[in-house]
Amino acid sequence: MAKYLFLNEPEFIQALLNPQTQNTAFQKLVELYQKRLYFHIRSIVLDHDDADDVLQNTFVKVFQHLKNFKHESKLFTWMYRIATNEAITHLSQKAKKNGRTSLEHQAFVISNLESDVYFEGDEIQLKLQKAILLLPEKQQLVFKMKYFNELKYEEMSEILGTSVGALKASYHHAVKKIESYMITN
Picture (cartoon, one colour):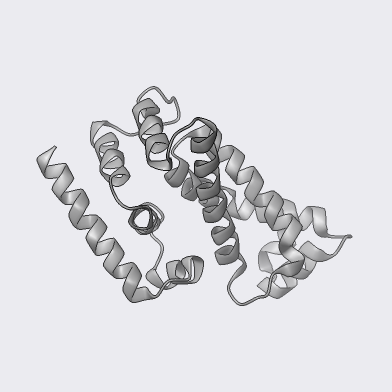
């Protein structure tokens, strides 16, 4: 398994596609990216159990669709895009199932964060989550990707299919709105 650490990406993808090396390579893929994807997903869905479910769905989709990977971006960027879409879809489905809008569902989850044993934040982190909730969905996503995941604008551009300039503007507007909320509330 350790030998996959030193392969370049095309060779690693071939190992993932080869039935003889697929299981070992996929275990390595999970090992390499599980934590980063989990925290990205968790920043979107907020709930630990939901994040675990979405992460599992993400890896299932990666496994199912790897043969369709076009190599137009890095493997991780492609996986990140899948994780982002799965997280957003999960939020929408969960909200619909509970008869709420996505915004109402997120407010519900934030109200339950204090009792979540996996939430390690303090009062300021909770206030930050509430401020983020008030942002439009796109600004929420851009802010979370930049602030929590420390992604570069170029990476976000590949993942979201949006120009770097638009992402910078979204982030700037998000920061201003969050600062205003943090000061006035």
